Image (cartoon, rainbow over all chains, first blue to last red; front, side):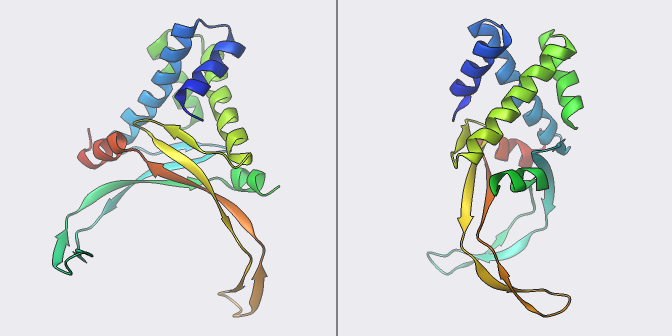
Amino acid sequence: MTKIDIIQDVYEKLGLTKRESAQVVESVFEIMKDNLAKGEKIKISGFGNFVVKEKKPRRGRNPQTGEEIQISARRVLTFKSSQVLRKALNA
Amino acid sequence: MNKSGLIEELSRRENLTEKKAAEVVNLILKGFVEELKKGGRIEIRGFGSFVVRSYNSYTGRNPKTGKNIEVAPKKLPFFKVGKELKERVDKGE
């Protein structure tokens, strides 16, 4: 499933034009991205939580050369699925 | 931000009624759950992708009691962040 399938679904079921459907679906993901880029979490009940985590710098190794390198501090996005979703997948 | 915050923001940005915005968000989420239940993959360019991974049963241990327990086979959803979002989150903009 890709954005095209979602847009088609919105178009067929919600009485919007193709253009409007594409626009609103795009907007949903833009809102989520803008929010996460600011470092704020998103909690979608019944689906899961998207959380930005701060990672401290750490020592790593280049697996190809074996050379030791410093991995810089960074922010990463994690997803924790909701209990409801995990139950639904195993029902 | 939670689901109602997302719906409000969508209604504001796109000039939709809150009802219509809620329908859009709920339809997308329903589609996601149905796709994952089928074992399918969801790929949103610039955002990320969701896949379901299957695990066989294994013998685990209750960390509190130390008792061995048989863990049933299970399926878990996984999210892999897309390149654009990954970069934006790291930069914080």
